[in-house]
Length: 552
Image (cartoon, rainbow, N blue to C red; front, side):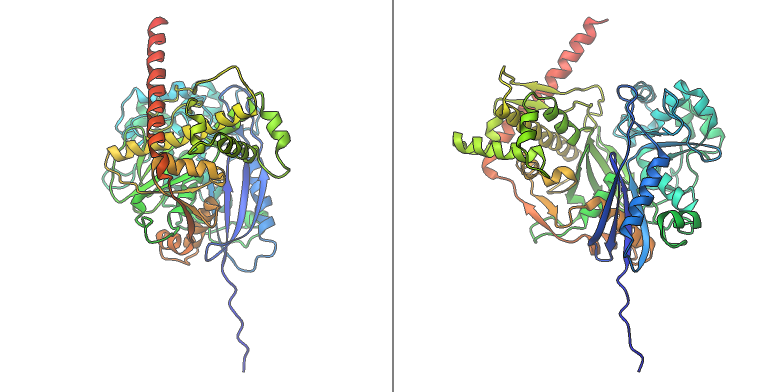
C-alpha cells in the first residue's frame, strides 16, 4: 500500500518596514512566529524637521531579511507587507528621484515623521474642503498632499521629473509584483481617496485643483494611483520573476495588498482573545500600537466623525468597517529624548546590565523609592512633577502640530532619582494623552471598554500599567507580542486563499493574551493628575495666544 505523507504546514512571510529597520518573519498558518530577522535602515536629517530615506537601500534590506527567514522554510504560500506611511518619489523610468534639498539622488523617501510641509498643511486646511472631514478636520504635515505640494513649491525640477509617487507600503508591493495598484489603507488614510459609498468613491478633482496640484488631475491621477484594493486582496499575479530571485521565493507566490505598519498592528491585535469578561466586539476594543510614535486604532460598523481624529476611513484596516485613527507623534521617541538629555542619564546607562534597557533600571529605582517612602503607589512619586508630552506637536485629538512639550515642577536637583521621577511623569503624560483621545472618541458616540497593546513600549510593564490606571480600562497584552508582523502575515494568509476573509484570518491567527487590570485604588490620583494635564494644555494655548498678540 502507498505510504501517506503528512502535508507540510502552510507558512507565510511577513515584512514590516518601520522607521529604523526592516524586519521579516516566517509565520505558521496558526499565527506563530517561527523565525525573525532585522536589518537597520539609514535615515538622513539634513535640516531640522527633515527626515529622508533611500528606497533602494530599503528594498535591499527587505530582500536580506526575507532570505534569512526562509532558509529552512518548507511551504511558503504567501507574503504580506506593511510599512510606515512615507512618501516615495520615482521618475518616469521608476528610478529614485531625490527629495533632498541638498540633492542626494538616492534619498528619495520623505519619512512619515518629516514636518517640512507644515506651511503647506496650513494652506490646505484653510480651504476647508469637504475631504478634510475625513482627517479630523485638519490635515497633518505627516500626510502626503502637503508633502507633494512642498515638492512642487520648493523642488520644481523634481516635481517636473516625477513619474510616480507611492506610499511606502504600495512601493513594496510594486517592487514585489510590478503591479502599481494601491491599498485602500494608504490611499484613504494618507491621500484623501474616498471610499465607502459608490456615489462618492474616488479622487476629488476639486480638492487637488484647489490646493494647486491640478497637474495630478490633468494626468488622470496616473502618478498617484488608479487601481485600489482592500488590504489582503491578491496583488497582481504574485511575485514577479525578478522579485522572486531577489527575495529567494518562487515567482507567482501570492502577494497581499499592503497596509500601513500601525494598521497591521491593529489587525494582529484585534483578533486576540482573553477571558469572558474582556470585550469581544472590535468596536469596543482600542488597539494601541506603541513604538517611536503611537497609533490608536478603533474600528466601527458605523461612520462616526470625531474632530481631531483621522477618519473615519472605510476598509482601511478591517475590510467593511470604518476606522478612526488617533495617535501621538512622539512616544518612544519622547521617552528617549527625556532620558538622553538629562544629566544623570549616563549614570543610569552605566548601571544597566548588558542586554537590558535604561528604563528597566529606572523602574527598579522607582520601586526602591516607593518602598523607602512607603507610598500607596509608585505613581505618587510624581505627584508634584507634571509633563505635557507634545514635544513634536499634537496629532490627536487636537491636530495641532504647533503644540510643544512642557514640564512643571522642576528643581535644581538633577540626580538619578530626579531622572526616575521625570521618566515616571513622562510615562504618565503619555497615558493621559491616550485618555484625552478616549474622551474625544466617547464624546462622538464610540464606546471603548478595553485596550489591546503591542509595540516596543508594550514590553515596559510600567508603561502598560499606567495606561490601565490612567484610563481605568483593562489592557490586553498578546502572548505573541509581534502584532505588526502578525498583521502582515494575516494579509498574506488571506491573499493565498487560506481563509475566506481577513476577519476570519484575524480570529484564527490572533491567539490569546494576558490582561493587565487597572489599580482601582489609584483612580482618584489619576483623575486629579489628568486635570493637571488638561490645565497645562490650556495654559500653553493661552500663553501662545498672548505672545501671538504681542508679536503683531
